[in-house]
Image (cartoon, rainbow, N blue to C red; front, top):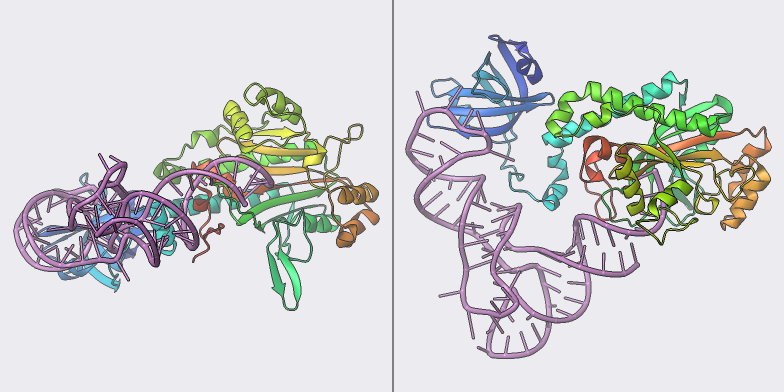
Amino acid sequence: MALVKISQILDGDCKDQKVTVRGWVYRKREGKSLIFLLIRDSTGVIQSTIKKDSPCWEQAQKITIESSLVLEGTAHEDTRAPGGYEVSAENLEIIGLAENFPISKDKSEEFIRDMRHLWMRSRKMNLVMKVRAETLKAAREYFDKQHYTEVSPPMFISAAVEGGSTLFHLKYFEQDMYLTQSSQLYLEILMFGLDNVYCIAPSFRAEKSRTIRHLTEYWHMEGEWAFGTMDDLIKFEEGLMEYICQIVAARCEKEFKELGANIDKLKAVKAPFPRITYKEAIERLKPKNPALDWGADLGYEDEKVLAEDFGKPFFVYDYPTAIKAFYCKTQKDHPEIALSVDMMVPRIGEISTGGQREDNKDILIQRMKEQGLKPEDYEWYLDLRRYGTVPHVGFGMGLERLLVWMCDLENIIDAIPFPRTTRRFYP
RNA sequence: GCCGCCGUUGCACAGCCCGGUAGUGCAACUGACUGUUAAUCAGUAGGUCAAAGGUUCGAGUCCUUUCGGCGGCGCCA
């Protein structure tokens, strides 16, 4: 009796052999003299048949949906079975007999969110988790191939990275601390020793956003590198995106098929991506949104219109300095324009923001003051400009937003196992 | 923060406009059925209609407030 994974049977590797499978009951259909058990493991779902004269008939009658079991039998081809293969059961051991499982075919979004701990067993969630894992793996592969060093920034931070209003505040023993919104400033520190660095870590935002593309805790893929230019940055980002999409398309074909997600759009992701300036974006949008003037930030509706036009990932760059963070470097002859670039995708809008960082201490202090920040709160950050400052660029990409686009998900909460939103944080 | 929608049995919903004894399907339970594809057929049981207050002879239904959920905008990745 060989212990096998269900996918091995479905792939035809166990034809007419005795097999042992371990898993959970996915469906049960009971007749007078024949019981069908559909058994799932991490690799797939297989049908097993138990006839009335089988020694495990009684166990099969007793077993319930989501019970765990070890089943032994003979695998064979059968066109009547879903997937084309089934196992005639000869022995069935119930490991954990399940109580009446609360999730059935009739379920609402609200209910499966309440039952998140049980819903995480669903095919859909597990397919997405596999795509997520491959996406992370591909991202690391790409950074590594480009000679980036992975680093581990802190989640507890003592001062704001940006404005301050969206920080989660917490008590750290007797003192005030915050949860990080971005690891960028810490990557900038590490860059001085490692040249090119990246991290894949959570970021926390206390924004009371009520949309299908916001989480209060999300995973942020961030990179930062010394001596980099804007052109280096854009090329790196499109290279990363192309690599992730091509690798995931190659490794997750089954998952995309079962999810019903369009894998062709991933295969079509090839560098270079279209690039337009903020000014061009405004001009394109003007006929549809006459109120949009130079200086205004692009709204989600505006981004969506642009994204539908392109139908694939693209960049918008050269934003007005006034709507960007204090650390953004500006154009030499046009200080009103920031060296900043966003990557956008259809349906989601922004999935990444990056740019050149201000490397001049005095300009940085001036920019802080303009935005109402106290330079004394950022002494260590200013030190980086005092001791061997260097031109550098970096970016951050939202992993879950990327997955929403890749997997055609309806809501960002399904791109992460335990979503934290304004209203939900259980379990 | 602003705006909109929703809350009826374990689950999914109807009933609300136009007030008059709480309905259906799934799940559960009992039984039938030789190949099902979240089967089918017959039967049984299951309700503080989110909460509070108000109008009324009478409120699931109308009004007010509160709570919970979902989404749109803004903000952002």
